[in-house]
Image (cartoon, rainbow, N blue to C red; front, side, top):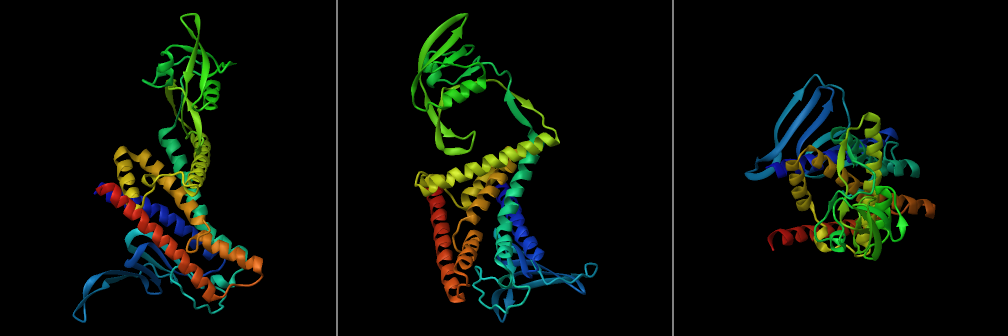
Length: 390
């Protein structure tokens, strides 16, 4: 049950913030919003603000004309909320996404009826359209920043206890141990370059992935000259997982550091930059074909990760939320029809052409985009099923 609840909270927050961005942006330029939905159809609960009050409609299976149909099964009105609104706020039954239905937009619904009214998106200029379509991505990045700020405030950060080059720990069966290095040794030079701080040592080692280099150490007042065959790993510390850095298999003792509000903000900014770099390099690897099929997944994998993170604690769960929020932002900005980036690409094409594409042409482009997205979803779902059951 915790896996399901964690998944709903995780996806619900991220999607709500994304769609809220579109909603606010649309309203800011005078575009009417017909429906704001968190979750996908069928609609489970509708909230409609009328002059009589807030109307709450609940939908479920029921008998209609002797057939079981999805229908309204309950309705009530709260008269204290009597400010009318044209927007219907909806909770969808399937917690797998959400949408904002704006007036005069050709989206996944394939609505092609444009009346030319001032409150339609089609009536707005290119910059206003781009603002509306990019606002969801912007909000996801803002969410990522605030989540990392919260993590910084809750957990703080860590730093090495001392910045000297004395080794506190040697990883068994890795490069340092195989070269004869032990805990307590002090690194004097790496690849014939003297190092005075631990940061200098780490930076130097990182420059030599999978290389054999000379290392000078001090042990009990004696200088020893050794050779170490370094290993390698993705450059996770900077987010450049498309790059390899050298590893020696040694570390320093870390101590926790509490962060005040200002330091938490700086921490949040740095971690958001790291997450954006991580996503950029990950997408680069995917497009280059350098990511195995086992490393990608669908909502099944996300649900599993959310459940594990929730069991591990609040901070791991928040960390996963921040990463998936960045992921959603980057995926949505890709110039694929059906995504926010696809809408922006079409807007830019129309600007370059000096005229609007025909509705028929845009419907065809949207159809191709939806086919690509649905095919990708099917592939990821099958990939997860194979991984779980075979």
